[in-house]
Every structure is written in structure tokens, then in C-alpha cells.
Image (cartoon, rainbow, N blue to C red; front, side, top):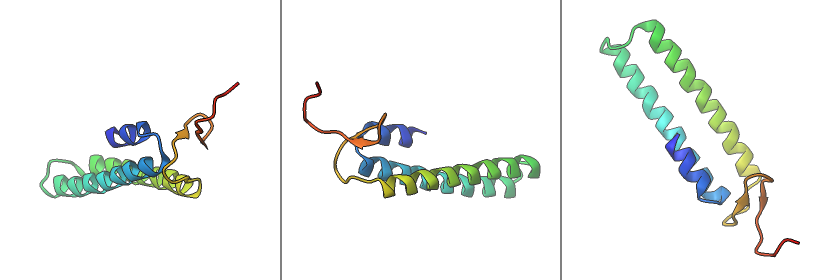
Length: 93
């Protein structure tokens, strides 16, 4: 969650995508830890499966968001998060 928040505050889709990718990698890392915790007996099969299902769901949601951002990417330009349109330096009237 911290990577998502940090990337969002960076102000551009390019950097947001970068931090969402870090988040996706963190989910994969956590799945690895869940397998290990199950193998070592720290988690019962039911809890392990429940957590793994949640991680799979999170991976899918992150991938959907990444695909959306890739298709709407304006490299290097800040994005207004309310409108998803590139910000300009032009004054608003």
C-alpha cells in the first residue's frame, strides 16, 4: 500500500506505473512468504489458501489498473487525478 500511495503522489502516470509495478512485485514476494510459512507449519491450509486467494485478487486488480494507466499514459506530464487528464500550466478562468 505504501508503494501505491507514494507513486500516486508523484504526480505522473509514468511514476505511478513504476510504483504500481513495485507493488505487484511485493505481492509476488508475499506469496512466496506464504508458501514458506505454510511449508514450515506456521499457517494451516485454510488460512494459507484464504491469504493466497486474496493475493491473487490483488494481483489481478493491480494488473487491471496498470493496463488502464498504460493505455492512458502521457509520459512525464502530471495528471489531474480527478479527471485523469494531463495538467497544464495554463491559468484557469
